[in-house]
Length: 284
Ligand SMILES: C[S@@+](CC[C@H](N)C(=O)[O-])C[C@H]1O[C@@H](n2cnc3c(N)ncnc32)[C@H](O)[C@@H]1O
Image (cartoon, rainbow, N blue to C red; front, side):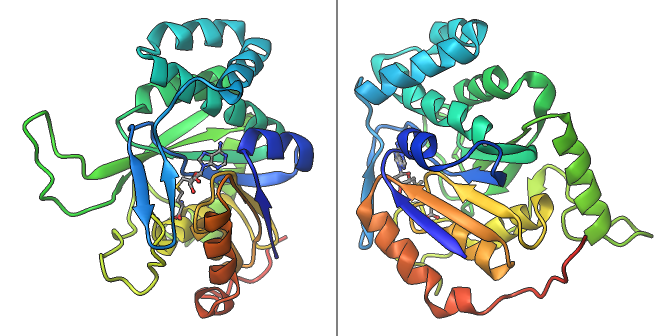
């Protein structure tokens, strides 16, 4: 069962989503890299100017953690960084509210604003609730450039809503893994094994920066059980919702773009979703 909601994530979360209602949040937001991303199924703007949402986000962070706000404000180097981080702060503060005490946030980013986003999550969730950062190789080489290393990986930071979340991740890993070898679903080191999406891969729907279903299945299996609620506040073409549905989890997707929700809705009613790749018995 999936719900799709249109609008800016911070506002939609505040008005539509109850406290402590999600077991897992995955978010793959714009990375703050000052580009417009376009595909045949939609586009999104990753260029940032100060807006009411930036201002509301910084105010929400100020209420939640004045020390965190001071730290983040000191490292936000440019006007566009301040505008972007304000929007992200508004979203991350709301995400903490909607997570259950046992829930986890999985925030996907690259090096562009990665350090600042980790400081933001530390400020909102507390550094003691940082579980780790996964590396996911999103493309296979050939991206060298004279300004630095070619960027071929993304990072996914994982934070628990409380200390209980670490226990729950461990418990799910134990339930799903082989009790003798310790190997199995839900147990992994800080490296996501899912392969990059190929340029002509069948699951591509033409949404820019679409992520592979296999990556989301890997994370969702690690963090949740069948029947749990997975929320993606910047869902784009709905990859997290498709993966959640295939794994018999409930899902909620939010996006500011109608094109994104149209693409997500088509995928959720299409054959890739209707065919669970994994038959997971209910675990008490
Ligand atoms: C990187 S894309 C997500 C791609 C998605 N993971 C997929 O596999 O298709 C980021 C999405 O965030 C959305 N977005 C940007 N700002 C937003 C906001 N304030 N609230 C909700 N969604 C937002 C964009 O419209 C875009 O669809």
